[in-house]
Image 1: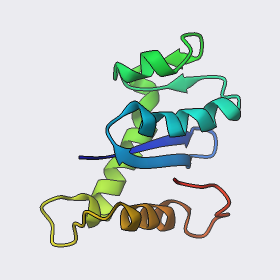
Image 2: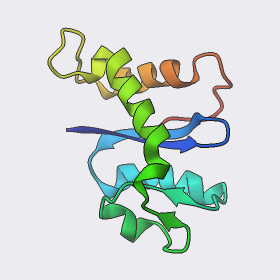
Image 3: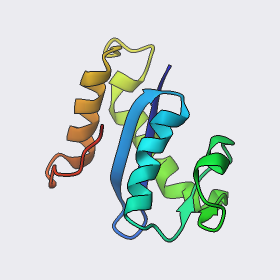
Image 4: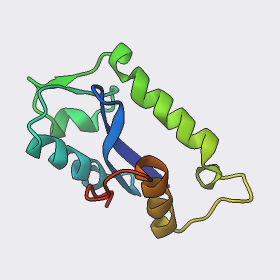
Length: 117
């Protein structure tokens, strides 16, 4: 199973980092390290238990209201990118192609210096 983890900036409403991989702490930690390096003041997440071990308690918040924008972005991804839908004719198992497609979709006309993986 492939997991897409993303960090979403609430001020400019853009994805600042994403990672694609197996459902492990390693995949999740790739995004969290970027947030720690950028000195994020607050990190809002859902209540997945893995976050408790990887994010400092003083900056970690788990309110569902604060994750609305990123959940909507994930809905848009699933709706627009049929490569993510397992039962569609467009689905592929290639992680390289998925990462390339996500980079184009999320950062197509923007500065590509921010890396996905």
